[in-house]
Image (cartoon, rainbow over all chains, first blue to last red; front, side):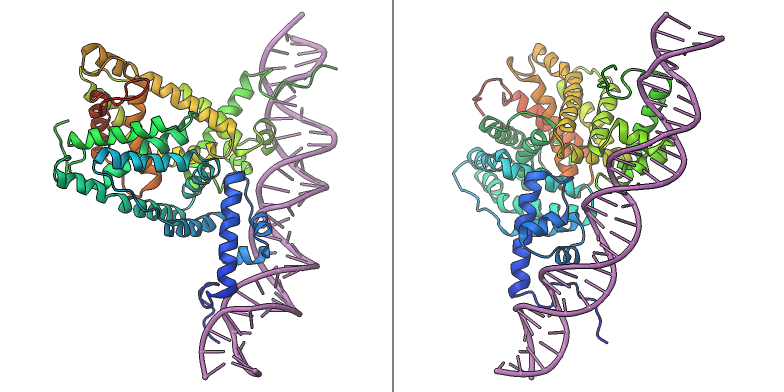
Amino acid sequence: MGFEGADPGTVRPGGRTARVRASVLRAAGDALAEHGFARLDLADIARRAEVGKTTVYRRWGTVTSLVADLLLDMAEQSLPRTETGSLLDDLKANARLVQRTLADPRQGALFKAVIAAATCEAKTAEALHRFYDIRVTEWAPCVQQAIDRGEVPAGTDVREVIRAVSAPLYYRLLTSGDRLDEAAADQAAEAAAAAARAGVYLRGGESRA
Amino acid sequence: MGFEGADPGTVRPGGRTARVRASVLRAAGDALAEHGFARLDLADIARRAEVGKTTVYRRWGTVTSLVADLLLDMAEQSLPRTETGSLLDDLKANARLVQRTLADPRQGALFKAVIAAATCEAKTAEALHRFYDIRVTEWAPCVQQAIDRGEVPAGTDVREVIRAVSAPLYYRLLTSGDRLDEAAADQAAEAAAAAARAGVYLRGGESRA
DNA sequence: CCCATAACGGGACTCCAGTTTCGTTAATCA
DNA sequence: TGATTAACGAAACTGGAGTCCCGTTATGGG
């Protein structure tokens, strides 16, 4: 008797198994975008994916852990950042990217649903954190370049500046009914740039506000 | 035959009906804070509230609409703002308040759950928006005073400044695993103050960043 | 204080999300 | 290429979330 331990999908990850995963994740994304996180059952996802529902239950078990896997998949498709000559323009490019994503009906609903799922289970939350860690890491260098150019004080927490760009956009998406337009994106970028220049994001404590 | 239209709880809102509502909302808050939004059923809430589950289903029907009512209740308990002499101190007071709320295990979990619920139904989302509208309205005057004192340019969107204080705290709560400490609160306040002074939140468009 | 009935509550019922079973298909290795 | 068995999928099954029925409680108006 061998150990029956290994989770399904790990021993023979090629061929059919991979196709099933891709198909189910796509279906999960569609379903989340359409129905939201609450009105979601795995049988519906199985139907959309043209896959037996037993398979979905066996490999993922719950909606939240399926979302965790979806986030793993989303994290791999990272978008390359632009590179202009100034901090503000780089941050604006980043802000516009986030804004366009969240303003898009499908993507916006998907992100809402994914965030909702992450509030419900630690494993999913961790996957979400990793997703944003990757996104932040992708864009952080543009702040480092601004430091090198002398636009921003040395010792600035570059990752925090990137997060500061996204924060108001996500906050608006979740807590207000207002539309996310380009003005909101530009404002987010300008606020982050102004604060960064003022030394608000200096590591390890007090800045002269 | 009278119209059977009026929802239960609206015709005789006093006495028992009010007690049941208070008890159920308290139980709902506890359950949301403990289990999160996903692992929640109304029968459990009814048990905690020592109320028949039929009553809960009849008056609220779904978890999301119960959360909507909970938000209505939460909106009524508004906290009074402080009033120091400077914008930065007022914003810091606000940021600390938000930070303490979100860092508290029970309250933090509750807010996460409520936000998750709001992503799932329009009615709940609207209740959440109203909740934050009230909170913002409560604090916006301190930015107006800063304008009057000449700390911040006239024409600044005062509500947007208040939202800018909360945004990074909520963003951190939802998308990172990092603890929400006082440093994060102060940083959020300083960033909002710096951006406001730089004219980022001037109404109707382009600022000189 | 009393009546009409709004609102509550226990318990039976229904229906479907999630599980179990077992036969079928196809990925990996020799 | 064939053997081994991981992984899939159809169908039957089950438990509990949500509904319905109807008797009981107590609110609000006269």
